[in-house]
Length: 102
Image (cartoon, rainbow, N blue to C red; front, side):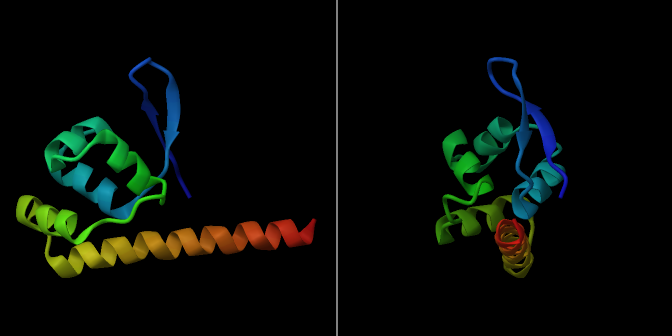
């Protein structure tokens, strides 16, 4: 798993959690920051952060907005969401196995 580095508003370097759909949208739009992505999707930066960190799900309304704005098909959007969910499950399983091994 590779995390991308990003800078906060205060200039601090932080690691950004990978997210298949959000990262794909950033490539499509040619943007580098979650703030820019939030502006493009007309949602708060907090929502982007919560989605990226897995504490907020992607609503049907947001899926529809992504479909309308990005040119991605609904099936592609669903596949990217599923890919991220599977990655999170694998990561959680690895954490559990590591804690049991100790």
